[in-house]
Image (cartoon, rainbow, N blue to C red; front, side):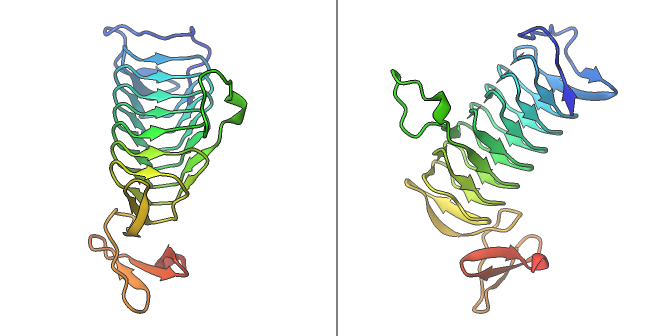
Length: 217
């Protein structure tokens, strides 16, 4: 990981000087229109595009992509190979593990009962998006829940409760309609509870309403 601390509070790099920032033979890219506060850790190969704001204490892993107008709150943790599309705010209390995909204009929250006239910063609820999960465009994720590994959240879904590993959920409120493979393709289980990914051919087992890669059993 690379730390861009200490640098001045708001960093506005000119077009001339900002193509790649090189530190200790490691590199990442920050577009000059973006603002990065002190004490932010950014991993090698990560690219942060137009009009983003990364608040102090945030940690972003290697080879991530943050699209236009992404906000990352104070002390947020983002793993490696994470892709966050345009117009997404990742508020304090949200954890994104490795290989997560967040679609454009997806919404996270961190207070369950907000009021403009009541300060509830001490009541933030944590939201965890596990490794490999995908959240579709315009989906809303209520705080205090967990999105399981390699789960797939459909576009526009409103997710109000935790989602199991490999689950496919859609709608408002979101309901589970099936299971997907690591490649994001729907799994069709036979009478013995086995299914193969249509693309990769890898096997999965459905047991007690949970899905496992067959290699993990």
